[in-house]
Length: 286
Image 1 (cartoon, one colour):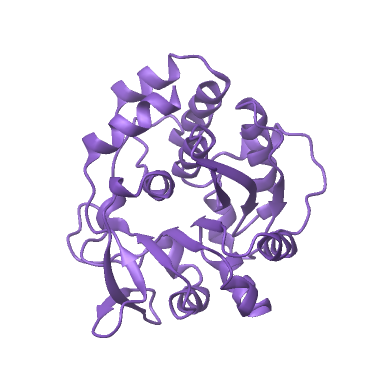
Image 2: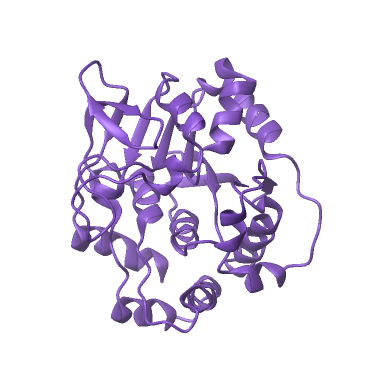
C-alpha cells in the first residue's frame, strides 16, 4: 500500500514528547512526512531544532516551515531544548501556512495533519481558507481532557494545546473536518529509565539526538518523558493503538473540552494500553 501523506505540526523544544513523536513518524514506513511545521512562541528557533533532529535521523530531505509566532512570554520561558536548537546554523525558513495550503491543494483528500501543538497554525489555516482546510483527509491531534486531567488529578483540566489558543481550538472543533482526538485521558504514558536506556543504547543518529534532547529537557532532574504526542503519532500509523469513540466536544472559553449532547464532531480515544503501545513503539525507535 502507498504510504499515507502526513504534515507534522509541532511546538517542539518545550516538552520532550514532540521529539519522540516526530521520531516515531520518521521510523514508520506506513507514512510519508511531507514536511514539518512549527507552532507557538519562537517558531523560528523551533524550526532550527527540527532541522537538526531531521539531519541526525538521516532525514534532512524533509522540509521544515516556520509557523505563526506567538509573543507569549510563557512560550519562550518553557523552551527547554534551546541549546540543541541553537546548535543548528541559522537560516531562513519558508512560511508554514502558505506551504500547507498549497500542499493540500495539490493532494486534496489525501493528507493527514498531525497537530501536537497549540492550535494557532490550525486556526490560521481555517481563517485564511476554510474550504481548502476541509480538503485535508483528516486531522489527528494531541489535545483536550475529557474525563481525566493531568496526573494525579482525576477531573478534567484545560489542556495545554487547547488552552494556549482557545479561539483556534474552537474553530477546529466546529470546522467539520474528520477529527481524531488523543486527549490527556489516553496519552499519559511515561518512557521509563529502562526503556530509555534500551533506546539510547542503540547508538543510531536518532537515538543519540533523543538522548541529548532528553538530557537537556531533564535539566539535571531524574524525570521520565511522558509520551503524550507519540500517542497521536502512533494512532496516525496504527489506529488500533488508541480505539476511538464518536462524541461531540465543545471547547469553552477557559479551554476545557466538554463532552456534550449532539452529533459527533470528533472521534476521541479515552483509553490506551501502555504495554501494547510500547510493543509497537520500541522496535521502531531502535
